[in-house]
Image 1 (tube, rainbow, N blue to C red):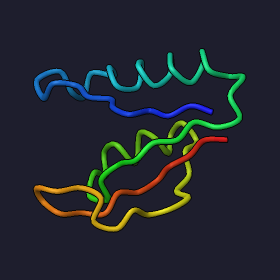
Image 2: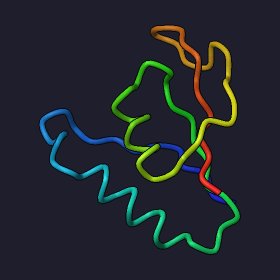
Image 3: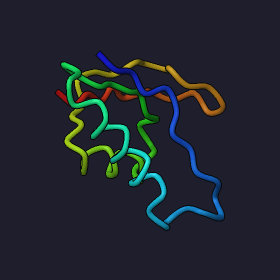
Length: 79
């Protein structure tokens, strides 16, 4: 099992493929895991699109998981 707790790229470096490279490295090195899971803000369309590109699927919702602003967290998993 694998759990991704945080992937972040400074705003000035976004849209340069850095997050894609990080996620690619992570998922390639962890091929022997039964699954990898993470949480993402429901409004974070860019991150959700990236995770879907790597075959992560929504498997749940954590109601009001985030604060400032209060927001649901989507549980995404790649099996």
